[in-house]
Length: 267
Image (cartoon, rainbow, N blue to C red):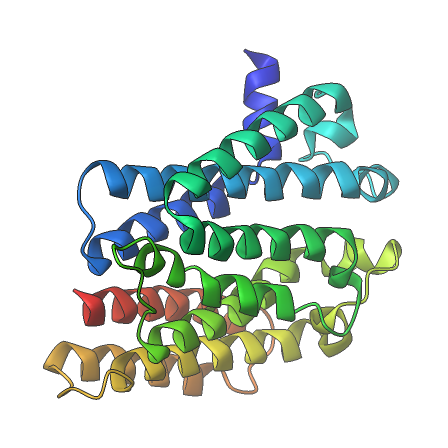
């Protein structure tokens, strides 16, 4: 049981669950029901597990160097071999489930997973650190639409909103680790911008994604859409130029509004 708990912790459970739940909701929005929704969410879940475990495997030496006590591999609570076996099993299951969705949906999902691996392996330390997130989150909505029979592409605004959500997610995800990353030589975009600049970029990306989700469908904007967009704008304006963690917290709230807008417009 301790090993299982540590394995769950090493999978980055919060983003893994959130992305998998978002995939399920997008599947319902695309018109899927029952077993197909479960299939899509399970495929995305196993893919996210491989991304989380590969991240901790690759970063284990850095995590040990900075004394990360929240990382089971770094503390020795979890053995490298255990994670490697779990990673292989999850990868095989992910591939099989992806193929069951259909070849086009499988290709889109494997592109998403590949972006996660590419980020973990090399891109996170470069000026292009935002790009795997943008491509992966932009690809996420395409999976349930390409799993339809026959496959179709999702609306353009959904892909654009997903990409902007990914850029914002990258920035706010890295913010808590800026100091540790600086010690180990990781220099992605958030590290170059600093905490304050990154917070503002995160707010801006989420706000832009919310605007695209509310206005992009080309249909009359419902009252709740204007309310969501207005709340996001007020949060963004209120965080401009503010020191400390306010931009970060504002970005997190706007991200939630972004997701609400996306799901509301496809509902």
